Image (cartoon, rainbow, N blue to C red):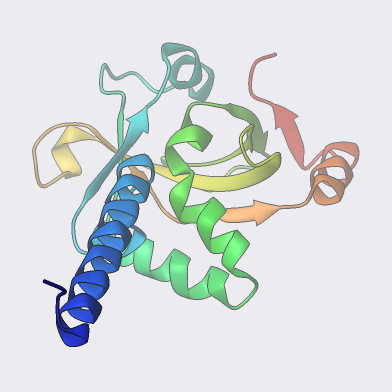
Amino acid sequence: MRQPIVVSIVNEHWRQMREQSELIARQNLRRPSVVAALYSVRFVANLSDEVVAALGVKTSVRVVRVAPGVLKHITESRKKVSQADVDLAVGHLSECVEHFEFLVHPQREGKNFELVAFVPSQKRHLRVPLKFVPADASKSNEDEWWVQTAIPLSARTVKARLAAGKLRPLFE
Protein backbone atom coordinates (compact mmCIF):
# COMPACT_ATOMS: atom_id res chain seq x y z
CA MET A 1 0.00 0.00 0.00
CA ARG A 2 1.35 3.45 -0.96
CA GLN A 3 1.82 6.21 1.59
CA PRO A 4 -0.46 9.21 1.13
CA ILE A 5 1.37 12.07 -0.61
CA VAL A 6 1.23 14.26 2.53
CA VAL A 7 3.10 11.62 4.56
CA SER A 8 5.74 11.31 1.84
CA ILE A 9 6.28 15.07 1.79
CA VAL A 10 6.57 15.22 5.59
CA ASN A 11 9.06 12.32 5.64
CA GLU A 12 11.17 13.97 2.94
CA HIS A 13 11.11 17.28 4.83
CA TRP A 14 12.31 15.62 8.08
CA ARG A 15 15.05 13.75 6.21
CA GLN A 16 16.34 17.02 4.72
CA MET A 17 16.17 18.79 8.10
CA ARG A 18 18.14 15.96 9.75
CA GLU A 19 20.80 16.13 7.02
CA GLN A 20 21.12 19.91 7.43
CA SER A 21 21.40 19.58 11.21
CA GLU A 22 24.13 16.97 10.87
CA LEU A 23 26.02 19.15 8.37
CA ILE A 24 25.83 22.17 10.70
CA ALA A 25 26.99 20.06 13.65
CA ARG A 26 29.98 18.75 11.67
CA GLN A 27 30.95 22.30 10.65
CA ASN A 28 30.67 23.60 14.22
CA LEU A 29 32.99 20.86 15.47
CA ARG A 30 35.67 22.12 13.09
CA ARG A 31 35.33 25.81 13.92
CA PRO A 32 34.35 27.49 17.20
CA SER A 33 31.14 29.48 17.11
CA VAL A 34 31.79 33.19 17.07
CA VAL A 35 28.39 33.91 18.61
CA ALA A 36 28.92 31.51 21.53
CA ALA A 37 32.36 33.01 22.16
CA LEU A 38 30.83 36.46 22.67
CA TYR A 39 29.20 35.47 25.98
CA SER A 40 32.08 34.09 28.06
CA VAL A 41 35.76 34.63 28.80
CA ARG A 42 37.53 32.47 26.30
CA PHE A 43 40.88 30.71 26.45
CA VAL A 44 42.82 31.77 23.34
CA ALA A 45 46.14 29.91 23.48
CA ASN A 46 49.35 29.57 25.46
CA LEU A 47 52.25 31.93 24.83
CA SER A 48 55.54 30.23 24.17
CA ASP A 49 58.40 30.61 26.64
CA GLU A 50 60.35 32.39 23.87
CA VAL A 51 57.67 35.07 23.42
CA VAL A 52 57.41 35.75 27.17
CA ALA A 53 61.21 35.98 27.42
CA ALA A 54 61.37 38.33 24.41
CA LEU A 55 58.81 40.59 26.09
CA GLY A 56 60.91 40.65 29.26
CA VAL A 57 58.07 39.60 31.57
CA LYS A 58 58.89 37.47 34.60
CA THR A 59 55.96 35.06 34.97
CA SER A 60 55.27 31.37 34.66
CA VAL A 61 51.75 32.04 33.31
CA ARG A 62 51.33 31.38 29.58
CA VAL A 63 47.52 31.32 29.23
CA VAL A 64 46.07 34.10 27.05
CA ARG A 65 42.38 34.96 27.44
CA VAL A 66 39.92 37.26 25.75
CA ALA A 67 36.93 38.91 27.43
CA PRO A 68 33.41 38.85 25.94
CA GLY A 69 33.37 42.64 25.56
CA VAL A 70 36.61 42.54 23.58
CA LEU A 71 35.23 39.87 21.24
CA LYS A 72 32.13 41.97 20.72
CA HIS A 73 34.26 45.05 20.01
CA ILE A 74 36.45 43.13 17.54
CA THR A 75 33.42 41.69 15.77
CA GLU A 76 31.60 45.02 15.48
CA SER A 77 34.63 47.05 14.40
CA ARG A 78 35.91 44.47 11.89
CA LYS A 79 32.52 43.76 10.27
CA LYS A 80 32.52 47.39 9.09
CA VAL A 81 35.41 46.38 6.85
CA SER A 82 34.55 42.81 5.81
CA GLN A 83 33.32 39.44 7.06
CA ALA A 84 36.75 38.00 6.18
CA ASP A 85 38.33 40.42 8.68
CA VAL A 86 35.87 39.29 11.38
CA ASP A 87 36.71 35.64 10.67
CA LEU A 88 40.44 36.34 10.82
CA ALA A 89 40.33 38.55 13.92
CA VAL A 90 37.99 36.35 15.99
CA GLY A 91 38.25 32.89 14.49
CA HIS A 92 42.03 32.71 14.25
CA LEU A 93 43.22 34.34 17.49
CA SER A 94 44.65 31.03 18.73
CA GLU A 95 46.71 30.54 15.60
CA CYS A 96 47.86 34.15 15.83
CA VAL A 97 49.10 33.84 19.44
CA GLU A 98 51.12 30.78 18.41
CA HIS A 99 52.88 32.66 15.56
CA PHE A 100 53.94 36.08 16.90
CA GLU A 101 56.77 37.52 14.79
CA PHE A 102 56.98 41.28 15.35
CA LEU A 103 56.74 43.85 18.12
CA VAL A 104 55.18 47.24 17.32
CA HIS A 105 57.68 50.01 18.03
CA PRO A 106 57.46 52.17 20.08
CA GLN A 107 55.62 50.11 22.68
CA ARG A 108 52.75 51.36 24.80
CA GLU A 109 53.31 52.37 28.42
CA GLY A 110 53.16 49.77 31.19
CA LYS A 111 52.57 46.09 30.60
CA ASN A 112 50.84 46.40 27.21
CA PHE A 113 52.54 44.76 24.26
CA GLU A 114 51.50 45.18 20.63
CA LEU A 115 52.46 42.13 18.63
CA VAL A 116 52.02 41.15 14.99
CA ALA A 117 51.65 37.57 13.81
CA PHE A 118 51.37 35.85 10.47
CA VAL A 119 48.34 33.54 10.43
CA PRO A 120 49.45 30.70 8.13
CA SER A 121 46.00 29.25 7.40
CA GLN A 122 44.74 32.66 6.19
CA LYS A 123 48.04 33.93 4.74
CA ARG A 124 47.46 37.27 6.48
CA HIS A 125 48.91 39.28 9.36
CA LEU A 126 47.08 40.23 12.54
CA ARG A 127 48.07 42.90 15.08
CA VAL A 128 47.12 41.88 18.62
CA PRO A 129 47.77 44.08 21.64
CA LEU A 130 48.26 41.93 24.74
CA LYS A 131 47.97 43.19 28.29
CA PHE A 132 49.88 41.58 31.12
CA VAL A 133 48.11 41.96 34.48
CA PRO A 134 50.36 41.10 37.45
CA ALA A 135 48.91 39.04 40.31
CA ASP A 136 48.65 42.01 42.69
CA ALA A 137 46.40 43.86 40.21
CA SER A 138 44.27 40.95 38.97
CA LYS A 139 40.92 39.73 40.29
CA SER A 140 42.19 36.15 40.40
CA ASN A 141 45.34 37.07 42.37
CA GLU A 142 47.35 35.36 39.62
CA ASP A 143 49.26 36.79 36.68
CA GLU A 144 47.07 37.10 33.58
CA TRP A 145 47.48 37.76 29.84
CA TRP A 146 44.56 39.39 27.99
CA VAL A 147 43.88 40.15 24.32
CA GLN A 148 42.91 43.83 23.95
CA THR A 149 41.78 43.77 20.30
CA ALA A 150 42.76 42.25 16.96
CA ILE A 151 43.39 44.19 13.76
CA PRO A 152 44.11 42.57 10.38
CA LEU A 153 47.06 44.06 8.49
CA SER A 154 47.81 43.79 4.80
CA ALA A 155 51.18 42.50 3.61
CA ARG A 156 51.85 45.97 2.18
CA THR A 157 51.25 47.59 5.59
CA VAL A 158 53.57 45.11 7.32
CA LYS A 159 56.34 45.76 4.76
CA ALA A 160 55.92 49.52 5.06
CA ARG A 161 56.02 49.45 8.87
CA LEU A 162 59.10 47.21 8.82
CA ALA A 163 60.86 49.60 6.43
CA ALA A 164 59.89 52.60 8.61
CA GLY A 165 61.18 50.89 11.76
CA LYS A 166 57.70 50.74 13.31
CA LEU A 167 57.91 46.93 13.56
CA ARG A 168 60.87 45.01 14.82
CA PRO A 169 61.42 41.26 14.86
CA LEU A 170 60.36 39.77 18.19
CA PHE A 171 63.29 37.35 18.20
CA GLU A 172 66.55 39.19 17.50
